[in-house]
Length: 92
Image 1: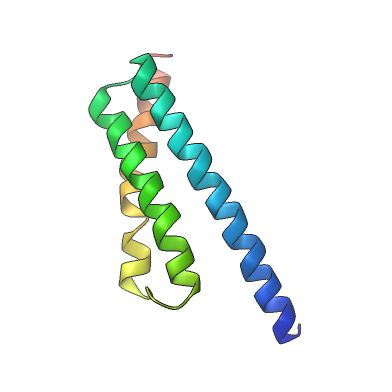
Image 2: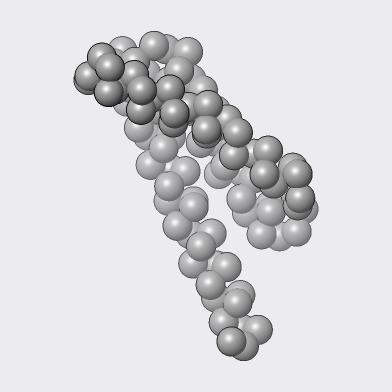
């Protein structure tokens, strides 16, 4: 694959992650407003989504790399796993 192909793939991947961050933020805000899940869990989702929206373009630009890039996913993990368990146990 050519170097341009790698840049194109990275750009498409970034767009997908940005879209997922936007959808995650909207979902967390809707859960927060609807009081369907505990507010603390919804706030974790909002913060995690915003962190990804800021961090992913910086990572693509080479600002964040290594452990810092991996650590930015931890807040999303602390939102999505308890959310899944909450929705399975309690429903929505």
